[in-house]
Amino acid sequence: MADHASLDASHSTAGEAPRISFVSLGCPKALVDSERIVTRLRAEGYELSRQHEGADLVIVNTCGFLDSAKAESLAAIGDALKENGKVIVTGCMGAEPEQIRNVHPGVLAVTGPQQYESVVNAVHAAVPPRHDPFLDLVPPQGVKLTPRHYAYLKISEGCNNRCTFCIIPKLRGDLVSRPASEVLREAEKLVNAGVKELLVISQDTSAYGVDLKYAESQWKDRQVRARFLDLSRELGSLGAWVRMHYVYPYPHVDEVIGLMADGVILPYLDIPFQHASPTVLKRMKRPAAQEKTLARVQAWRAACPDLTLRSTFIVGFPGETEAEFEELVAFLEEAELDRVGCFKYEPVAGAPANDLGVAVPDEVKQERWNRFMEVQQRVSARRLKRKVGTRQQVIIDSVGLTVAIGRSKADAPEIDGVVHVASRRPLRVGEIATVKIERADAYDLHGTAVGF
Ligand code: SF4
View (cartoon, helix red, strand yellow):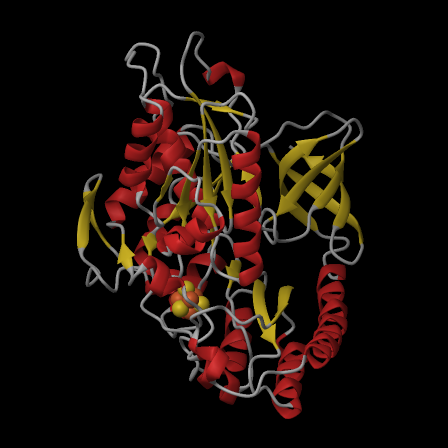
């Protein structure tokens, strides 16, 4: 995912403010980092430029997770150097600056992930800020690179797990959770500014607060523990949709399903299982690998029948046998997950997984991926079809001449499907309408607005 920073013209100030062009690559967590940097720079009077050309400086927030993401980051840096010449690099790839400097010795500075201060200092050194406290107006909730009606809310940085295919803990360090009161304050500001949907993200959302020993902090008239359940309940009380991403199937997640059944937070879990064979999961060193996942999924569905489950999987992990792959396919058939992404294993430089077994040949990876997708597409289509004839609440993301595009409670932005909504009156972006679902195709739903 790549986003060029863009800022509503109404935020721009006239005059000679230095202009920064910003490229944000990678996952939603990186996008949140980008928003923080941009908010800070806007507060200091910098303006954003939609193009590298003519800007005073370019910042590239990189992704260093997979080799393909690194290549994309290096290409983005190359483009910025060509089109502008003054480039600062930050983000995951910045944790290993030599990888960048070897290819692009001309970059002005390289800083690592979450090093907001270092990025800002590098910007100051390259293009000093213009001080004008009266013109440097920033909305109190900060500048968001996502549309105004939804926002990502990062509750922690880093990760205590050591999945063997992943170098994120090496890049971002161990889990550091934000106190509950700080998260809630940010969430409340966003809701007050018009945000209708909060997307909770971290590397491991279910581990929230472990590092803080679940410490309480003062929020309004009460103490709130830094615990997944407590934070979810409080976020759910703010009046926005709350969607949980990157949760692992630990036993304590069961408690949160109760909040979903009661309508406090959205009945949606983004839960990256990555595999279903116990032996592969063990080699992957996945969190909660010992849990009886299928039984847990079934119990969640019984407690919250509307629950939507999204997940991602890796096929062709080193040493994956045909029998292990078949265990995965059997799981897909039985678990009936709603939305699923599948990746062919790609070796990540520095990840222990590369030495864990014989590499699966590319053609076998491809063949397994095809079989996986075939099974899952059938399952997903079947799940989606069950919605035909129901009424769903749909949040509107964009409006066209005759049809608006929105998402039901089952659809996260950018990764899931959409709902095409016909309406007898124009709908507004951010509005939540009741939609009668008339048709389903492979990924999306189609219907008519029947309540506003
Ligand atoms: S849970 Fe595993 S895959 Fe996710 S960030 Fe942590 S180590 Fe990486």
